[in-house]
Image (cartoon, rainbow, N blue to C red; front, top):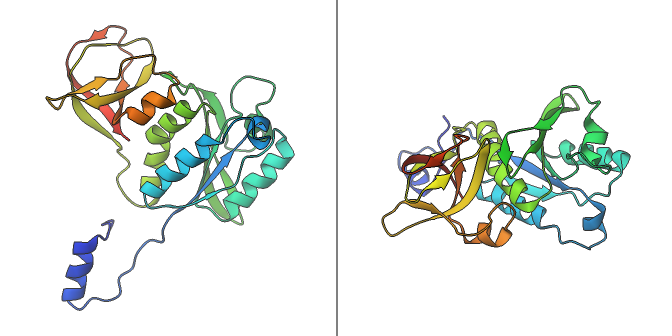
Length: 241
């Protein structure tokens, strides 16, 4: 139980005459982006493209249900429509502290939903809850709207959730050997990084907090812990992209 059936497994099953095995259905992941600027076409909806591809890499059947305008009633309707045909829904945007935080406005009174700040950069605003849809619980992960923050948060939180729903291990971080000093602050920082010629992970140069270009060049996100000092060497957690 819990084994992902790959070509060699299918060959082994066939060789012993086992033609039917019980399996979990492929998870259905709904992506729901928000923001009038996306609806109007002023800004491309890169979050949906990124997260849909990330979910598909994990073997999920992905459907996008946005972008949705900054109207709480419209958002609630679209979220429930997504939840009816999904095992998990991920939203992006609308959870910060501004006047157009449509996700918080629509869900803050829903029982079991939480919105707050985590000690992480990028990705400080976060939210989570469970919708009951026809007696079926559907987890909803509400991520920030900034593209790097949305993708990093999905890798750190969303991939674990999808793995657990699929009956797999939820541990998505791996240990790597640090190849260059990193200055750690008072919160967890996600830094785009690559491997050097010695197989050690090093951060990409430049201001990485909101750079999609650096993220596209990266092989991993380095999870820098909030130590408040320079980390010279040693093992460090990374998220593979």
